[in-house]
Length: 185
Ligand code: S3P
Image (cartoon, rainbow, N blue to C red; front, side):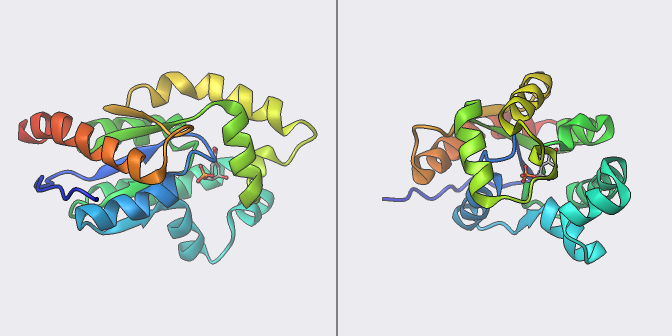
């Protein structure tokens, strides 16, 4: 039975975590449960540029993708509260990380490297894993980024948990954390 949250959001909820963490899938369902709009920063970069993410990486490089991603996320953080799923590398851009910390309630969706790789490869289209050893690439990125993800307000393990259980845990955590955080000026 799905529990409804009566938390009044004055800040956006931002999902962070590696490729394959389930940010888009969980984010969409979480937004529906909370009655908030859902935004996916990768999808918005693609629709703004009319290019796929692999195309952007290939034609203009990662730095240009990060610039486009930053513009989208900073703009979303200034909208009325919604649930925002970010790309896995968004937190590596200092201005994005800082804005998330200042303006949002953030949730790190966690999983181990093996689980992330299996999920990420099911969907494909991840330029940073298009290499000879995607597992090593993912492990390196996870190691570099884990301390950045760990700055999120809340961390939820996704591996053993059903989507509904992940969402229940997020809502419970947000009710605790964001009540306090959202009350602050
Ligand atoms: C990236 C993750 C991707 C996408 C881009 C770069 C990353 O998003 O933004 O391919 O640096 O980890 P997902 O995390 O939604 O796969």
